[in-house]
Image 1 (tube, rainbow, N blue to C red):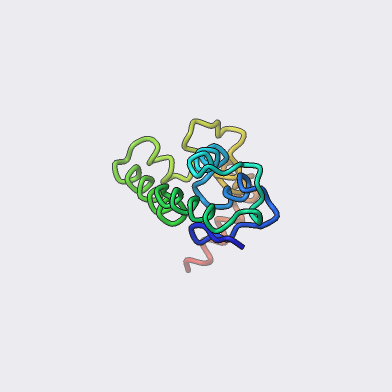
Image 2: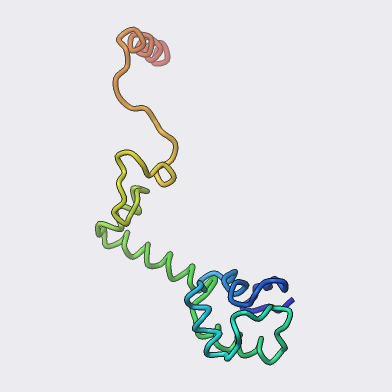
Length: 136
């Protein structure tokens, strides 16, 4: 199994699909990488020889991937939070950053629904009695 940037590539997949397993390399980047390395995108990983793998590794070294990219993204988010810009505030409040609606959707970002608001008088009286007994 060839290893590129510390990631083992699946041998039965095409090289253009297998390289997308590396964080920071997508379908568009793969085509550029393979063009520079002079390798056919339809070639399987198991068909690659050591020289071709070395060419891919050399090209991938110049691209920010995996840990370096994750660190850069987290630093960018921390910078936005520190300068208190709109996007930073949205990150702080754990709300969608890129203009999505939040009135009816955004459940994955905001979390489980929490009901806030009106309580019936009868329930409120029970709640207040419980608070008074806890205080004394």
